[in-house]
Amino acid sequence: MRIIKIEMGIAFFLVLTLLNCSEDDNKNSPEPSTKLAIPFASIASNVTDDSFQANWVLVPEAENYLVDVSTDSDFSVMLTGYDALIVQDNAVTITGLSPASNYYYRVRAQKGTEITNNSNVITVTTTGVAPEESEDPTFLKVKANALENPFFVGVAVKSNQLTEGSAYDVVLKNEFSSITAEYEMKMDPISTGSGSYNWEAADKIVNYGNDNGINVHGHALVWHNAVPDWLSDFSGTDAEFALEVKKYITDVVTHYAGKVSSWDVVNEAVDDNGNMRNTIFLQKMGPDYIKDCYQWARDAANAAGDTDLLLFYNDYATSTNIPKQDKVFSIVDNLKSNNLIDGVGFQMHNNYLSPTKEQIETDINRAVALGLKVHVSELDIQVNQNNDISYLTEERALAQKEKYKEIVKIYNALPKANKYALTVWGFKDNESWIPYSTDLNHPGNDWPLLYNNKFELKKSHTGFLEGLE
Image (cartoon, rainbow, N blue to C red; front, top):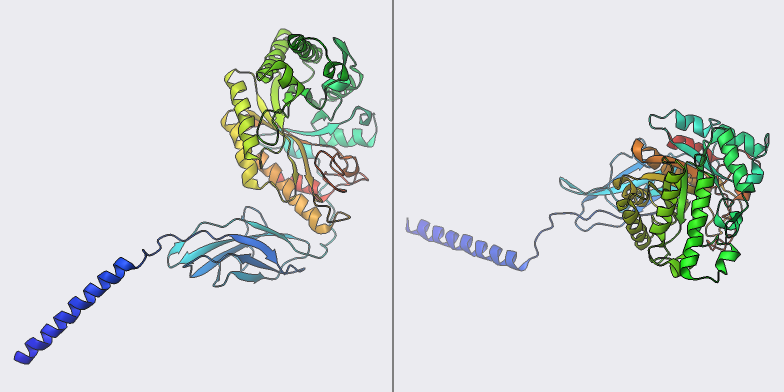
């Protein structure tokens, strides 16, 4: 009995000692992680005709990773064998792919039962040449009109393209339900002096639309890059300058009352730093000039009995430039509070890599939240913004197709009340404003539209159609 008591005493002492040591160790050691970081997926490497290596940054404490690969950007259909594929390393080779095809991958980290949200999505286009396929010949407006919530499919035009029986005429009547004048309905070509106008080109465009049952969107009443010389050199007072602008807006809106369904009243009033652009209108009319222009347009329309006229604000690069986006919507908020605006035009002169789906949705949804109509007003997608290709490669054509599909799909998902039109900025690649543009600092050729130089359908056209599904 005595020996047993000693042994039990020693055992009790050892237990107390271990407990004390454990408590001290816990005090000095960091708290265990309770939440894994979401992985960051990196650009793919070792891309071939039928494989590529997916890469991502290691997450501390992760035991393994779950990799998804899909042929759709929304991951609605997973590639066989790559639905939550378990990987221990920070890379895996994806095999069994088709040449010249788009794939998407994303990653989640796992530790025990804890699994993170998805990483960013990486797009990969395999090398090689895809099997020869003809593009879908379905007309854009036919498919758009068959939607539960249809919208106008538009194109930018020049008056000299609207000749009966021309290739432009045939394509336009088949494909498009709306037109926007590329330049000829701006102030510079119309206004030749105070109260003096040249309506010829603008009238041809408007009459063509009206005669053929095609919607006409007016673009644009006020733009700093389309001020006629007589107004730029105006020698009167600032108050007299404002009266000239009011007269112009009033006369143009009145002239086209009942013939033009919507106008971009002010175009590109915000600079790339998120400030009011220092235009002649701001200098002479002050910071309220935008509100004044919209009031004059609304008053002119009402006076002419055109109470259904829609007034838009139009600008570019708001999806990626957040200071600019914020400034644009501060203007739009003010106009909305005064019942002077009906919609926002998002130009969407994008490229095949940018903006992301999330950036576009965030931008557009700010207009939706205000109850305004959305016009994707000047859509084209560059594929050679860095001048690194000398012809439209299969890989870039496929990437462009997917980007068109993505944008159209985003637009098509909008509520019915917020849809207006989705307008492509031109017909053929060789006539686009993008190649060698000094405004964009675009260094070389590009192929940003739905038709090639021969008026043949491109993959981008098929992408547009797929976005309507």
